[in-house]
Length: 394
Image 1 (cartoon, rainbow, N blue to C red):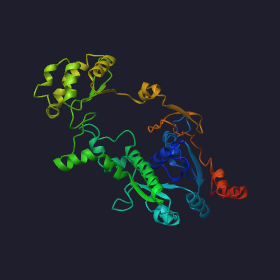
Image 2 (cartoon, rainbow, N blue to C red):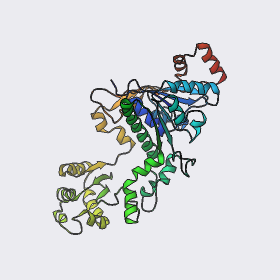
Image 3 (cartoon, rainbow, N blue to C red):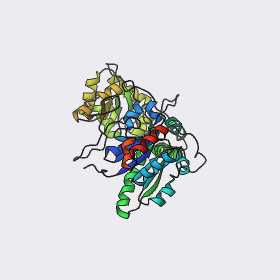
């Protein structure tokens, strides 16, 4: 039995942050009913068409195992269908613009008054109060506003993170918030009203950079792959022309690198390199010393020597490297899920229960489950046909 079997989630969601949260709930066994617009659905369906020429990559990643119900929420009967869905749910999650859900009678206070056991999750860019409440909030914009871009990139050029980290961060906090609320409800019988903003999530993830700024008066320097307060910690060349990442966290690690890989035991006690603070002050010299040796070794030989010396390291992989990664294959992490464009490969989610495997259901077509869900709610076939003809459901 998966831990969330028997839990029903109704999600009025789109894009990345909210679907990421609900997909994880679904992987753990919850029933997730995804409410989409009748005219195109979740706009992430069409960010691109890179999955076999017809399905968006974001949508394929974030929406497996969900039931799609297409509703026109501008119509009274569409809102009535949604209200009936929420009445039978354990969790209602939405990421509309601030205030939009409340205008449809789906505000947290109103829903909790009608359904005291309901857990309501409101997700937004900047939260329900404050001067930025109504400011547009997409992943890149929040990365910029919360300072993440300021610490990512080269000394000359700031860059955003390549994955949508603001969305992912908010989705993770919404996911964990639901789990915490379900645990509390199991004790008290009461639901919860929870608010998660992308800005707050990234601000939390900026902790080290924020504390550095607060207590030194200077924000951390952008250091490409490096770390602003640790050295050596970067990518280094090999004779094959493929970089290897080396991360020395402490002085013991430096001693292991100097003696076991660089064959320079004198560097262990040299005052210019013996401590991390000294190495950070002399970062350019440290990196040059390391690169002098690594550039003479092939990638596999360098990785072998680093591993034998106990020095933390990694291959600098791209998407091809990850897809073919021996650790995924060796731990049987690949599965196949259904989709409107045929079966797709997907990796198991990171939470691994010893006695139950994640439920990785098919990716739904827009409105694929509308008829079945309406029948479950008590709508007869004639009414469903009329609602379809009028465009209230799709």
